[in-house]
Amino acid sequence: MEIIPVTSAANSLLKRIRLLHNASGRKKEGRFLIEGMKLFDEAVKHNIGIEDVVVSESFLEREFDPHNIDSAFNNVVSQVVVVEDRLFAQLATTETPQGLVAVAELKTSAYEDLFLGAAPLVVVADRVQDPGNLGTMMRTALALGATGMMLTKGSVDAFNPKVVRSAAGALFSLPFAENLSIESCIIDCRKRGLQVLALSADGDSPLAEVDLTKPSLLLLGNEANGLEKSVEKSADLMVSIPMSTDSESLNVAIANAIVLYEASSQRRNGSH
Image (cartoon, rainbow, N blue to C red; front, side, top):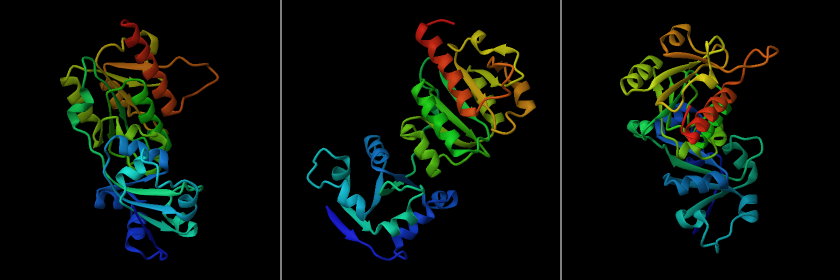
């Protein structure tokens, strides 16, 4: 493996990495950033194309083992750029950098993959804007058996660095589609035989009474405003999560987890 020291912030690769901090740069380049060894290993495991790797001097001293033949790092990387920790801090998107940044090809999903299986369970994130929320929703969806996610226009970019970190590798496994209109999601999924369920504080169908063993589309709305009223009314059922009267609402990622856990439980038991 070739180790290439770089000392200038004006280096073309370092400039490109900084460009990928922004959604416009990621879209233009068709690339995104992976930070840290754990996510790097997950990306390699899922055959995400890795183009360039930059590490800090302290990472090289602390974690790099050129003799570890089992390391994904050594198996897929032919050269590594090394920079001073001071320069590396400009490349990382975290306050406490992990010492490794990789440029990776954007992962795309085949739309049909969202509906695999006898009873697809698809989550719609409608204008979800907090990257931590979206990443957690994707991680939960994968863990609890959702077949895919749809992200509507106005949602945070799925390859935002914080989404990538929060998803903890789920981004590489869970089929998803971005930049959709919620109306088209509903129309298409209804044609495919999915029941359309809108999660709403005003819902008149308590979660435990809803049959989630059926093919289902779950609509979850924006953090501040939830779903549009017209969207709620277009659903087959408006579903509510019974809560204490002392509580007004739940974080969208937590609500997603509760509904998906109920769906997972019903499907494991084989009945509603």
